[in-house]
Amino acid sequence: MTNKKTIRVGILGASGYTGAELIRLLCRHPDVEIVLLTADRHAGLPVSDVFPHLFGLGLPNLIKIDEVEWHGVEADIIFCALPHGTTQEIVAGLLHHTGHDVIDELITERREDLIAGIPDGVRVIDLSADFRLENVDTYAQWYGHAHRAPQLQAEAVYGLTEFARDDIRDARLVACPGCYPTSALLPLIPLIGAGQIDADDIIIDAKSGVTGAGRAAKEASLFGEVSEGIHAYGVAGHRHGPEIEQGLAQAAGRDILVNFTPHLVPMNRGILSTIYVRLEGGATAADLHETLSKRYAAEPFVDVVPEGVSPATRHVRGSNHSLLGVFPDRVKGRAIILSVLDNLVKGASGQAVQNMNVMCGLPETLSLEQRPLFP
Image (cartoon, rainbow, N blue to C red):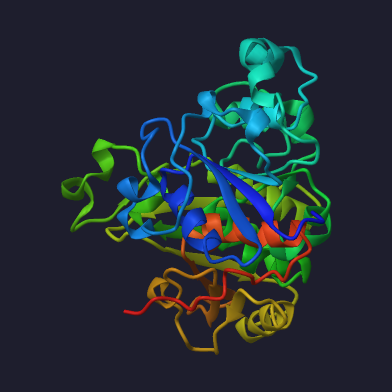
């Protein structure tokens, strides 16, 4: 927790969708001052040149991360909104710690520049996948290279806020969950913990808007490639699969394997996860609804809709809220769970700000109070 009245914040990778969302949310935070914004491709530009909707905020211009004069930057919290695979060495430098030959070799030339002048006590909130998987061998298997900061991975806190507040409060490094895992873990962890569903028989059919693919130009994200269609991707091999399994395994106390298939739909924001489960211990769909309702009754950002109501992505767009619904399946002994959230807010930047509030001992809802946009 910082003792300063104003929390000084830096955002690395501020020209992506999650970076823009961080700015949008933090610019109205009463206790935050944004002191640093990096973006290599747009270095030297005002933020409003890249994101016209962020006009008139008096923010610092964008700068290349390699050109940051860290000795002149006074920051309490650094948000890393960098591409996957690029964050580990940066975070190792920010936290003044590597202890591993591979990372030392990678950043020997840059390390002094990265850490020079950064005050002790800087804390990092990472929005990439670089610190989400606790097992570094699993990380290497799914991301194609050895983990470059394994000793930091050992202290990283997986920041699913509703289940990790105590650890988040004192963490130096918080790894924000992926958008798909957030939508799946919020309903499934309590139900596995209650023994009401079979943890070995879970099917997650998830659909996301195009912003989940990031802002970099990609042929598969072009309007003509995405509009008027829907398609599955990462079939039986999406990197969020092991992240979901990690959270479920912790709830179950043993290894879990799930059937997870993501789909891309022609909309900007939102995730809908339709989750098929087998009931256990005589539980009914109504029992699942009651368990989730009780678990999230005091949570500011997770709500369970009334029985028979189907939550939709348009009900949470632009907000940090997640809605959960439960239906009995026509197949005896099974139930269907619906989970919706905005992938850029509760699935990324909003959850990151929520975690920052926890880390700094502030009300968790600060700067996240806005209701969803409709229509």
